[in-house]
Length: 82
Image (cartoon, rainbow, N blue to C red; front, side, top):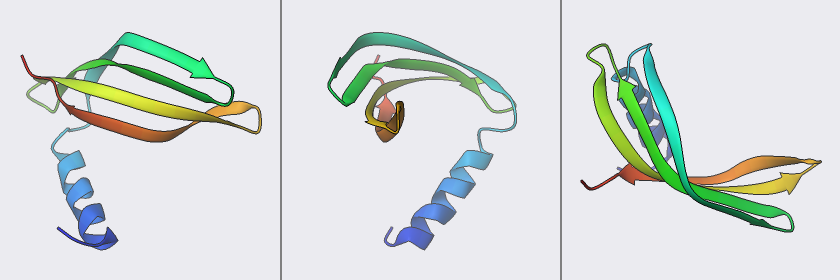
């Protein structure tokens, strides 16, 4: 897959598979901050779609302090291995 249009189309299709309802819970394993940067890493446990498929993602998010508030600048998530 190449190009912004292809990525946007793929994301739109993937998002539809999650349906309109579901639950999510964040299990933070580690977090920290220094100056204007902060992060957390952990597990996102979710039930998604009409069939409530269970999934666990390993997640890292990085934040930067901008105009007095921390803003998300990077997120990485992939399926957690059992």
